[in-house]
Length: 446
Image (cartoon, rainbow, N blue to C red; front, side, top):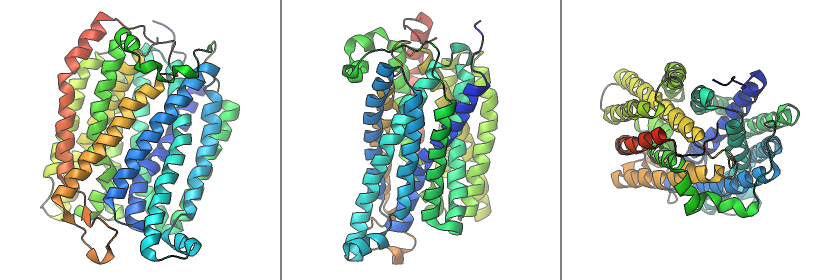
C-alpha cells in the first residue's frame, strides 16, 4: 500500500477552502432562497429560476476553468484569486433591496420588486461564475490530484460533511445574525471572509508536485466525446448515480427551510436546533461509516446509504398533523436519518468517481462532473419540486404579506415523498457499477 501523502498542510487547505466554499454555496443555493422569499417577494417561481440559472452558470464556468487549469497545470491561482473575487461579489449583495431599487429608478414598489428579483438572479449567476471556477473546477481538481484510492473514502467523508456543517451555520446562525446586524452587514462580513480565504491561499496552496500541462481550450467538450465515454464506463456510470442523487436532493432542498418556517411553523431557533442536531449527529455517524468505506466495498455500501436516505425522506413526508413538541421531535429524528444517508451517498459516489477519473484529464473532466452533479439536478429537481408545490397550492399563511407579484403558495410535504422515490431509483444502477468496478476497465486516477 502506498504512503498516504495527504499531510497536515493539504488537510488545512481542504478544510479551509472546502468549509468556506460550502458556506458560500449554502448562502447562494439555499439561504438566498429564504432571503428572496422573506425580503423581496414570496415568489417560489423566482426561487426556482434562480436555482436553475445558477446551475447552468456553474456548469459553463467549470467546463472552461477546469480545462484551462489543465492547460496551465495550475489549480492554485484559480483557487486563490477565484475566492478573492468570489468574496467581493458576495459583499455587493448587501446593497440589493427593493427600497434601494425604488430610490435609484424612482419607480413604484410593484415594478421595483420585479427589477430587484432580476438583479438578484443576475447577481447570483455572477457569483456562481467565480465560485464555480474557484471551487467546483480548481478545488475539486486539486483534491483529486492530491488523493489516492487508499484515502479517498476518508477524504470524501470529510468533503461530504462540510456542506451539512455549512448548512447548519447558514440555516441557524445566519437567521440569528440577520436579526442582529441585518443583511447588509451579513453579506459584507461573509464576502470579506471568502476573500481572506483566497488571500491565504496565495501564500499557502501548492499544486501537486509534477503536475503537467495537458490539453487546450479545445478540450472543453473532451468529456462528452463518445470515445472517452466508451473508454471510461465506470466514471460515467458513477456520474449517472450522482445525477440521480442530485435530482432527488434538489426536489426538496431549495425549499427545506421555507417549508420548516411556513408549513411547520418552526421559529428560527426551533428549526436551527432541529436541523443542527440532525446534521451534527449525521456527521458523527458518517465519520465512522466513511472510514469503513475505505476498507469495504464502497459500491455495495450504496445500497445501505440510499435506503437510509429514502427512509428519512419518507419519515419527513409523514411527519405532520401532530402537536408541536411531537412535530419537532419526529421531524428531527427523520431529518437525522435522511442526513445520515445524504452524507453517505455523497461520500461513496464521490469516492468511486474520483477512483475512476482518468488520471491525465482531471481538470477538463470537472465540467462533465458538473453537468451530472449540478446542471441537470438543478434544472430538473427544482422543476419537479415546484411543480408539486404549485399543484398542491398550499396558501401562504399570512396572505396580508402577499401581493400581485407573489405565487402565494408554500412548499408542500410531497416534495420529500418525491425525493425518496427518486433516491430509490439509484438501486437499479448499483449492480452495473459493481460489475464495472470489478472488471477494472478504467484508466484510473490513482
